[in-house]
Length: 330
Image 1 (tube, rainbow, N blue to C red):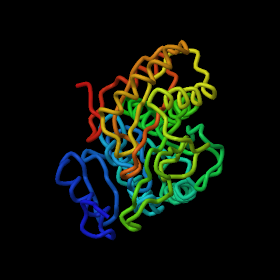
Image 2 (image 1 turned 90 degrees about the horizontal axis):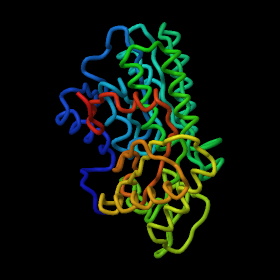
Image 3 (image 1 turned 45 degrees about the vertical axis):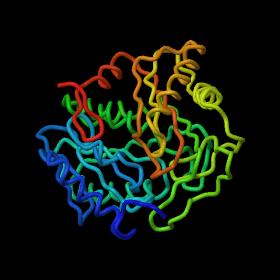
């Protein structure tokens, strides 16, 4: 095992300490595992809270800041945070305007966020929830009932986060978040398995010269395994899988996402193929984001997420954002 760590047991805590040192604009509670905007709670503003297992960085803590999340709850590697973290985060950022939980559709996350909602409401915090289930690869998986939540999480956190920043009420922010989820679809591909610090070896067996089409962000099986394909062939397969389900009638935002170990040289090359397929299918692309945003430790591979946008959603996407991992505008 070759990892830049001390011991597996302290990986998450060590990372949070390093994040705190690098980003003084955040408040990082290492012991209680909550990351918040330093200026939270923001008066009159709906707060967005998300979280999940660590190992998917920069998701979610890297998206805390003006224009996106108000707080994030990092769990252990590939393990849901606990309800106490979520309630603590909600209480820390609630200004009285309510809190929206953004929850990826994984069984542990769903159960714990649902329990946190009940506890938060007992404390007088108004809470709503949006469930992210954008992955078209499989209907059910090892970790979910229904579709997995993947790249659309970024779209929801950015677009709903912008609406909240503008002062939209909770019902409106929730409605926008649900709209983004309904208009988003994803498909991922693994070229090599990831290795967790605790296990020290690949989390699943992917033989030399093969790839997994439709892999999940924890290494869950996808649709099928095939001999290695070219970037062009993978883009044809992945984009067609997304479009056959999404069927957009207008422009899309495209996220070409690395799984953690795929260099930008390859991702930009893959993006060229994704753009080619979309052009051939007559789908206009309004915006494109390329990079490692929703990762799986050191997995080699990529995913593509498309979100069909209207004028309002595109305006909110373009709105200013200032987080460790996503930053544009004033």
